[in-house]
Image (cartoon, rainbow, N blue to C red; front, side):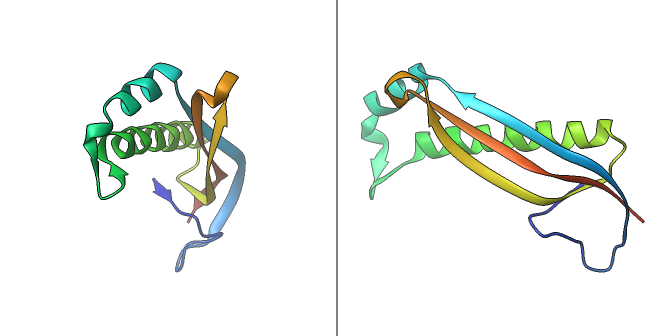
Length: 106
């Protein structure tokens, strides 16, 4: 399945719009406590552990997005937008969401 942030795919024609699809992943508060407790991972101001968890959450959100598009009969998702939000009491959780338009390409 083609997943892109662009509104169309060069050289391909959209024959049908199937609807808006989304996928989400939420990282819980325990993850943040563990990550900040492991601050020794910091190298040059970056936390490899934190970055890996964000990548995992992004992958989960994009996988859900593709599964929902496929369930609608789509073979691509265009106009994908990724959002990151902090949630919960004391901003103890992070949500990664991906949304886009499921389409059928010729």
